[in-house]
Image 1 (tube, rainbow, N blue to C red):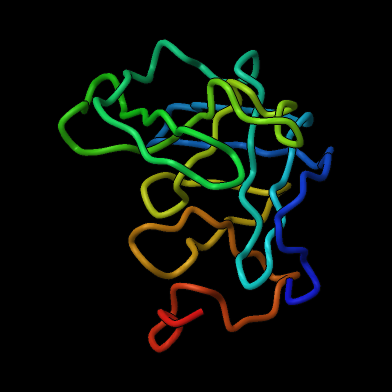
Image 2: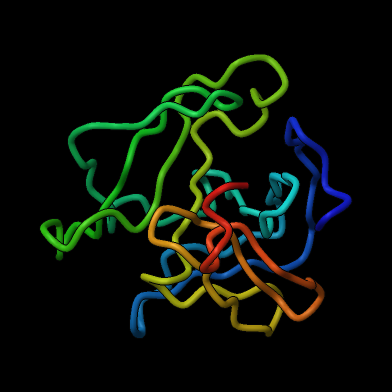
Length: 148
């Protein structure tokens, strides 16, 4: 991931991506995109057709990414006060239009899998990268990396 680009890029990923909350499957896709950015584990974005959107509810507010635009956040519909578990970019700029409306999930809040491997969350409260055995750190978000 140290050879991932900056600015970040999109890459198609056809591995099976699943996201679970307890015994409820929130998403199941082989049509994901990964956002690759220097010093960060990839973030996976899943098409809305592969997400059980009725299990999610919009959260007020949003944030701005210099590359992907304004993010909209989502919580579990049955647990809306627990905070966001996912986000989307409804109207990303050129270069990221392919992920418009696609969902990214926080692996620290849910059980996320790439094929059969359970993902570990990227360190740090803010980040949503998916750490798998194919990656070598250190990763942005670990102690001492705030200056990156």
